[in-house]
Length: 481
Image: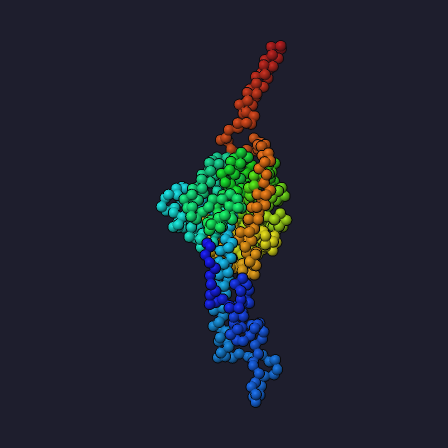
């Protein structure tokens, strides 16, 4: 990942610096073959030689006819120019990514390891160097210049109020074992400084993001324990409400609102995440939850894998009024590549992903843009972004759209590093932790104990005592009569 920059190719215009990115490079390449400095100027016929009468009025444009050598030259040069221009932007993308590899906000490879191998990494089929039928393996990560990855620790909503915590712990374990099994590729880190260290060592900085607030089982103690095990972002909901936060399906009418954004306990969760220095992830949450969290949090937040609602009107995406809050809070939207959130259909392409990036940059600013591909977590990805190796092609497209090198480096890594550092700076481990538990009547599930809460047995005894006292009074009244 730290190879030397490639030498200029035959397609590189000799007079243009390697850091210049402009479509006019191609035009000047053709113009040079015809002695013009600007291809946009009208083509005029050379003046007549001495003794030869001119057949054109002054300023008259030359008319090309079939067989004109200049016309044929242009025709065969156009395809060459297109190829050379594409090569130039791809080369530029790789040059930039050697210094600023991409930090991707969301990858579900751990879920694939569970689904395909029940987390048995020593199964020969689970070898990450040769792993097939996934968007992610080690050669693809290298080809895509992936230098940082938040690995998604995900457990489905049907584990809520059942075995969500156990499942979450097992997925954290598989991320740790993956990093231990391939130390030449992955470096497990828990801080922005750790990411920079991984960059220097040419490894993939590997961080843990817990996808779904149901993984903490409405417990601040579990939240703190997950932090100690390496959790550095928590997605407040998945595709289901928690007892303390509403998910995005509330906005489609498929779920009923419970918390109107965040409940009082949900607010305590946000404050505890701030205190610990954990990134708050608003992918999957309702608009009300987005706004409530952006207003409450003392640090910037992220959307680890969401796109722009104005480009594709899926409620999983971020609307413009929220994007403006993202800008005000210096937060970050890491664009999801799932076709249905890119084009709102089953098919999409790389250019449409770039449209989302353009829109977020326009509304929230270049500092608000990042990448959260959701590879290995979705069934359909865009043409041109078939797996994690294709990141350079997306960067090349942004360069074609006149993104500056600084803007591209921001989207690749610097924006996430800035937000992560701000979250770390806002943390305060010496501050007293949040301790007030969620009210018992807000907990779901019938298969849980309630130690610490008013005892159910004591309540039952009190009810029987009341009934016995009532019966005794009734018997006494009968005797008196």
